Image (cartoon, rainbow, N blue to C red):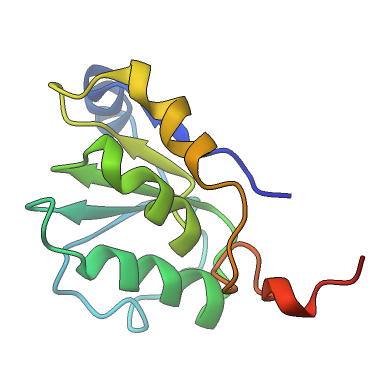
Length: 131
């Protein structure tokens, strides 16, 4: 069962950032295998432009190789079109760019209900699932 990606308003994210405790902020050029994750509850990964996908790789490495189970949040230039891939690579929340329409979010997730390949959330590929 897939966990739902939580959407956070930009204003709420800013308010949380001021009071953030145990949050690790990684730039998109940082190696996610280097920092200690001891005591980290949330990791913020930044998309400086929607076309820069390095944060997808960072999230996947944090989930699959580092075993991070806390919140991974997408920040920056985050579009509705990216949310499905974000969920598949290990993000648990996203701060949408202010001009994005929330009406389209549910339709985006309903468009893709199952995937042939495994991912950071459901590692078993579809062809290996038991009925």
